[in-house]
Length: 305
Image (tube, rainbow, N blue to C red):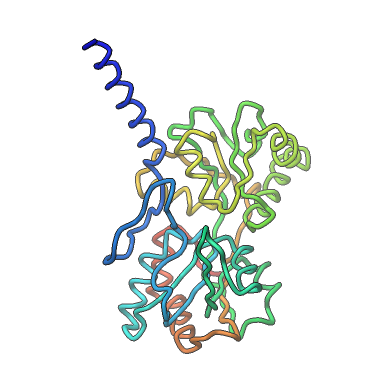
């Protein structure tokens, strides 16, 4: 009986350890706001892409989702520089989702409906060009390139994009349906291995389940790699760089320039901005030494002026 109880305790502890392992790397990866009741439950109630003060905000910014790592420093330093703005609300969802939110007027998350009008919208150049008539001012503020994120020490020996077409490699891939990076990665596949590689990864492997298309956000790729659900995933370089900054067990495979692509990020002040002066002040901060220094710290390349 004593031996049985001992085995039961060991089994329960093992199950708990596995459960803890499942959520060890769960976001939010940034520092949550201070004050109030902490109600973040890994895997259940966890909202990493909505930030700050949603009640009576003085500034609302919709950031393309790949910039989640800069938000802490960017918003904190902006408030120090412009102390008249202390209630700031930001989102870091895929730009396609953010555009739909602007058009429909709200975002529904579980049982919560969020109706908020942004002052500033950021995205890649293509998306900004589609909405050009909606802006009173547009600025290019940063750039990026692609890299491949893999599990620590690269156990599958992935050397480049062509290896993502291998049958033994489980790939996590941003869904091009709503993520701009997805379309750019497809361009890189064609550069590296022609249409055959693009089709192998996006059609054949997706149909068989060895390419996973993200459901909502390319934040899923590092999570799948950290949980050993995927072997590799093409990401913006800054995302892989950030995971290493916070000492998560990933490695980075660089993509040569001839197979890589360059992205440029643009911010636009909406003509419908509820807080136009705050938006202009933030744009000045973003383009100034402090804002640019923060983006450089997190691995972004400077804007093409």
